[in-house]
Amino acid sequence: MFYFEGLFGLFTLGLWLFCLIDVITTSDGDTRNLPKIGWLLIVLFFPLVGSIVWLVAGRPVQANPRARSYERGVPGYPEYDRPGRFAATDTESDEEFLRRCRERAEEQRRKAREARDGVEE
Image (tube, rainbow, N blue to C red; front, top):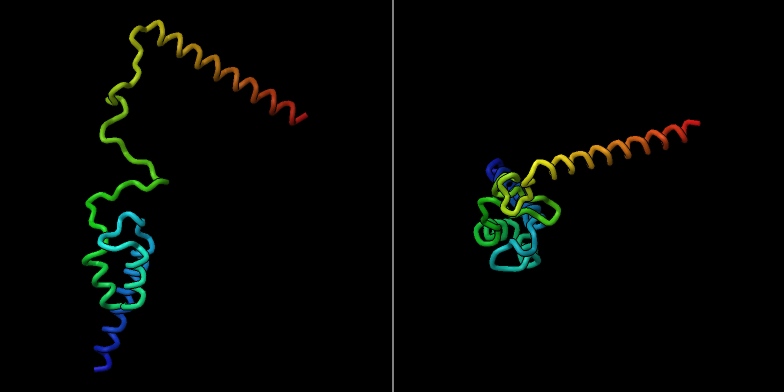
């Protein structure tokens, strides 16, 4: 009988820790039915029942979670198909743009060489 109680206690502890961490890491706006602090208190003070209730009624249900503020979202279409994307209409302006890019890159390389040579002396 003690073996069963030990397994049940271990299961309860694991479930409680999982749900506690899950509540803490869930964004404020993603929780359902209660504010995040309410769910945190329920899971904290009622380990087994609170954990089960969190999984059933509080945990966010999203197929693909939205990107957080520090994450970049992936566009729904490739960059080259993006509406409003600039594309050169004539080859002369495209060649002019590429020439200016090459000149600017060469100028930056020259400045970097001068700065490196000036430091070594």
